[in-house]
Length: 80
Length: 518
Image (cartoon, rainbow over all chains, first blue to last red; front, side, top):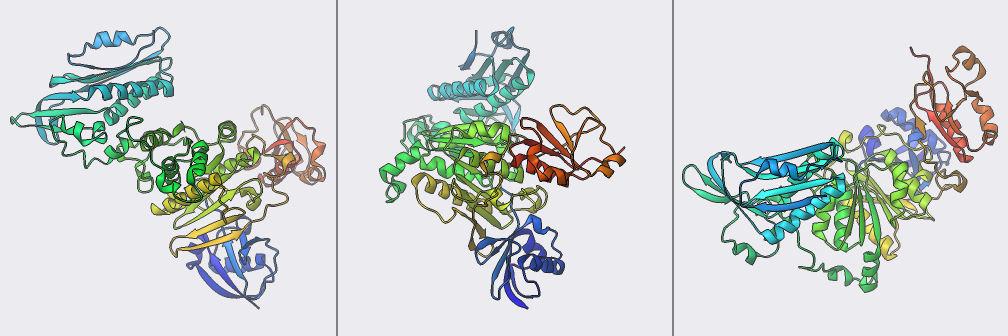
């Protein structure tokens, strides 16, 4: 199990009902982590509609999770 | 002979003679407006009216309105006459007549002239009531109030209500040269100084979207003295905009925002050359317009516009400041020739409707206000050569928690916008067509598998090339063609069209795919 800190924005924050949480994940990469959280929170956005950032930098979905990482899921935003 | 005139008359108006004065054989439409003296105002019975004008200023402003209408709507003949002096009930107080080649412009120009005259020309109205009382009221937009209080007092009457009129301070115009703009507060900064100020004066900035983000951007840039400010917005003001678009007044609802913003910004700083474009940003029009500017600011509210603006900025190698908001959050990104662009982050694009805009998701007014202010600041940094952490990153601002986060973004090696041979083509990426009708201008490429084609052949002529084979070598399709890729649902076609574009072909995909619907 890997312990990661998650930050949600926009629609994801709404659907998760929280801005941040720390989770123990069975996943080995960012993609698996999102799928796990999507199931838990019922996120409507597919992975392909999002970007993930790890420790302050946009990252690939295949990036391996490391203990203590800070993971941010970023949906595109259009309003103005 | 072309008539473009604004005048006053102290005699009753001869409507037949006025109509004749704007008759024109080259015109197919004539629209006129008559403003009448009515028998009540604000619940009081009115017996007659008296109009008084500050003529020197009023004629100049009125003439400017006529010229604006002529320029904006392509008017051939335009005339406005406003009464002064004592008027009885039912008499015509103001008359506007416009002749144009086609009727649409005549209606629009006539409406524009009367609205602007009511807003901008300094005319006072004294009402005489049935009960014997009288008073100067509804001093519509007492433009001279902005000049100085002395000239106002010289009129010998009081204007109790115009101090409460929200439009007065914004609309009243300083005639050029009366008060010079003063940039001293920003010039004191070491990063600005006289050199920086001359850079700001020399800068040409195009702001796309004159809404929640655009209003602070435009206001601060006009205030700062940016030499040329383009305002592009195809929308008209809606009452639901006003909680966040504070440049406008409720009396402006229904009028084009680009024109409204241009008026306010000219009033704010007459030194700025403000250029309104009443149109939505699309690849077809934006590249031509943006070429004349140094910095592009994206203040639009939908993904298709965001991507069009991004692609044009990247193609023209112009720095661009992008922002968007969602409820309490916003994102800011500065792109230049070295940094990641929107497509580096979202190579597949993003679809409108997936995550909501202000109308769907809701927004508190100050949220775009803050993000737009950040954009204005980033534009000034670009102009002044001040480095910014918003370059090469997306700045995410959460205004509920007041947290700000910088996510570094690297330029993608395979970014479809940056990759030079596959610069975005001026064509839509997906198009909607009924394939049962002839498809003009496109070579239809059917990327389905052979069994699918056999089961449901396309009605018209097409080239059959299954996706896998097309991807093996997209360049097998000759250059110079325009390829419309089609599959059953639209997804394979999207991939095919993208691959073709990356190989320098003009290609689009059929939205939704081809199905055997009745």
